[in-house]
Image (cartoon, rainbow, N blue to C red; front, side, top):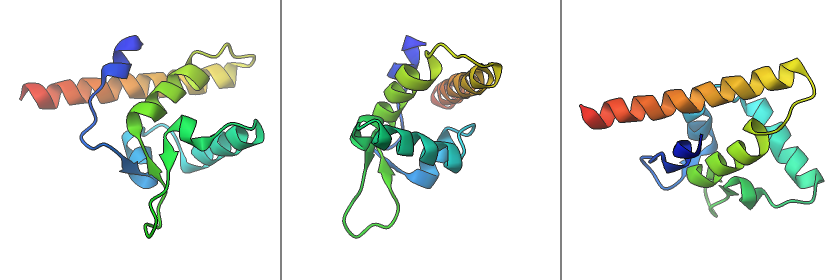
Amino acid sequence: METLLNYKFDQPFYSQSQLLSIFGSISETTLKNWMKTQIEEGKDLADMGYFTIKGVRENQWEPQTFCRWLLANKIRVIHKYDYEQSHADKIESNLIDIKQKRRKNVSN
């Protein structure tokens, strides 16, 4: 899993819709729930890689920070319920997929 932190993204930051497209197994509702929980816990959204640009409508995300946050907070968590583990497994397999696709594109 640590090798996922070395994944190279094409851009330094992405809009929220682009981020959700890259991390395909994460829905907008799920992301917004995570953001809400982060705020309720008194944590900064910047810890997730979130930021805004004045004059730009859509939220922006730094993908490396988001990836580290995702690994630390959602994938490695010990889950109480099967559905939580299942969701984490889907996210993990999607991250592995992203890395494999990137390797394929680089080697071609």
